[in-house]
Amino acid sequence: MAGIVSISRTILAGRRNKLRKKRQVKFIQAIWQTLAVTGLAGGLLWISIQPIWVLKNSKDVVISGNQLLSDKEVKSLLALSYPQSLWRVEPSRIARSLQQQPTIAQASVSRRLFPPGLLVQVQERVPVAIAQTRRGKRNIDNDNKTINVGLLDANGVWMPLEKFTSLNSRVELPKLKVIGSPELYRPYWSPLYQAISKSPVKVMEIDWQDPTNLILKTELGPVHLGTPSSQLPEHIQVLAQIRHLPSQLNPNQIEYIDLRNPEHPLVQMNQKSREINSKTP
Image (tube, rainbow, N blue to C red; front, side, top):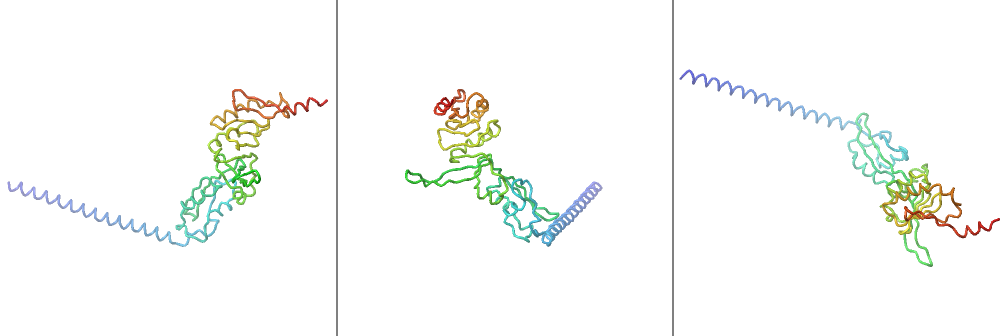
């Protein structure tokens, strides 16, 4: 029995020594890990405060994604001062300020470490129509309404004309004209514009002033579409189907084309013009 007790004590002592050594190894590893992390953090901090991590001038800012605005014009919207520490620049704040500009739809900004700089990617709003609206009151004796002129993109976002042209006067303004209140046509604008842009019939003007009758000025003549609805793209499809109408009727005798009921399109003839023409020898 004494021999068994002695062997058990030896085994237990060996296990305690192994556990003690494992704890010592883990302790040493923890110290080394702490030193390594501290050293890395200190090294990164030292590198970050070096004078090389500075935006020296606007050449350190790289612009991409712009097609209408030049690099210089986009950089003028950043509101950055030079020289400036790269680490004091807030990319998210700059991106938000860019997206507040009427000409910028989306923007992303990130730091570039080698060489130090900023990467700015933008998505511009492309104007597709000149929008005209009247604001104010109108009476019989005096027209106090102010005409506001702006630009619309494909999604119906309004852009002040002066703001857009002041940034880039080289951009050719769109030919399509829209008249009326944006509040009236905003729900229908995007699908209608997409349909018009794909239609073989050229549309020069969209008149939304009468909420009960949307009027298009087209190469076929005025087209009355009635009260705006979600079915406007279908109306434009019918308009494309009757695009050969001038070969069947004298365009000068067409007062307007009535597509309020697209299943039964009608042509309102100008009777006065017909009488004049009939008297012509």
